[in-house]
Image (spheres, helix red, strand yellow):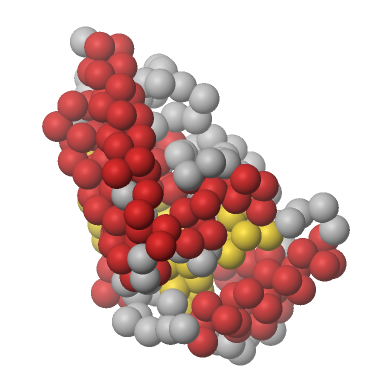
Length: 249
């Protein structure tokens, strides 16, 4: 049954995504806020399909910690789920992505339209400078800058591998930083079409104020984010069904 529901969801998800891209193609010529609304609706539609086909829900905690104005969101990244499901939680997110994505037909064009932050990763010093400059522009637009500090998806429980980009943004933007913990990788594992029933928990932690010394901020952010994410992973495993579906995938 798990396999059947997973494959049904995959078919529905990819068909729905294709329809959003094709039928919403005209939004490339519309105001950016219209395109962002389409992105938000795609996230909501995908969450609805995931809940009703695969039995995977979402619970959000600590959303009151996200300010209405500009801020920096530093989020764990365990799953492709994170790239669409988090979008509706923000008023106007600008997500840090790798620059190569812009060449993907439709998807990449919309990343440019959304004015996400597309970063070339070949030259670290130049890339960090460009990241901060682009971040300043988005903050001036009163947007939330969202970065996955490890740069790629990490399996739940894997040793952390934080890159320096989030520290450069924190120092350069001068806005509060909200750590975002989650356990999505338990239910939407990387490199797999299986989607496990249960509840993905997203937790916004208390803001870290701007202006902390680099080393203090780095140690504080990574400890809080790892501790919270590990707690959510343990909670997700404990709540898995009696057959240990999540644990034994």
